[in-house]
Length: 378
Image (tube, rainbow, N blue to C red; front, side, top):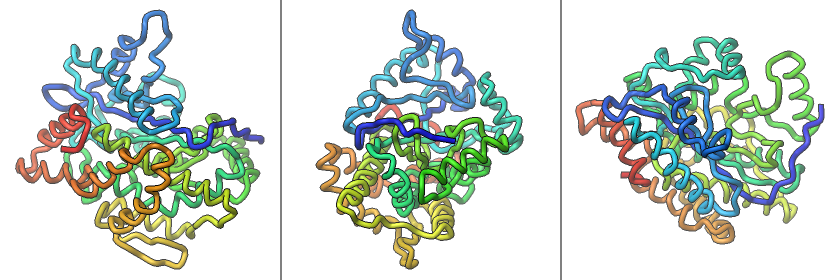
């Protein structure tokens, strides 16, 4: 099976942001995606070009175009959200985002009426019906297919850093799970989700896909939902590790970090340097540590097993990537990572709100809605 890799501009960037539709009065999820999609559609067009359906009727995905800078992608998202609010506000629906909704019950959520979603739920049953989760996907253009797999392996050495910064799902169905990112562990229950398979050659990826399609696991490669994956149709590496962010500032900070990381490793390849990689057992442990402890995780840094507090390692990473950010025009957006370090990741802010309100998760939803409207952490 041949998997062609599309031509793509080097280090172009695109962002996908999954948003929850919540009732303005109760804060619970609303099953109105079909209504929203129909009413946001421009006259004469089959659909809005930047607003898409998702698995559940409580979810809308907004997407940017393929842009040169993270800031340009952010302006796409900003305009699209304005279009969305023109439809949701008369319905008394608010936009909210976190890795999970703090108290919504999975059993009450309706699935979007599409064949591929019906097949997914039929196959995955109870676990599939638990996927009341929200994320951010960042695409970074790769100009040469031979770079894709080495860069993917190198990005995985910073997987825990990305997951810790984005962690925003401490609550599940009204309970504090004790995890910073419960979404990370939920999502990996799907048979083609979680940490990626790591290959040395593109032909190995093709053989994997051939086997998976032959045995009926997938119909096409885009049904492989790894946390970091090639996106051959778009000519990108897609980073799907992130929990959903409650505000645009954080979305752009995480996107800038991903953008710079991919470009940094691409430049290393240009210089003929060897890219870092780690054994899979370290990657599995890092994923669990960052999901459990978030910003307090002690992460494994390299194949030698050296360790460091993730926040200290992130500060060093930002210093390393600052010249790259300057070249890519995203210094301001990358500086948003320092804001997350200073104000706390979303899971920390959510728990702080709950403590101030005697555990009331209605207040947590209200705080997430307020951050969405403010466009920054509060």
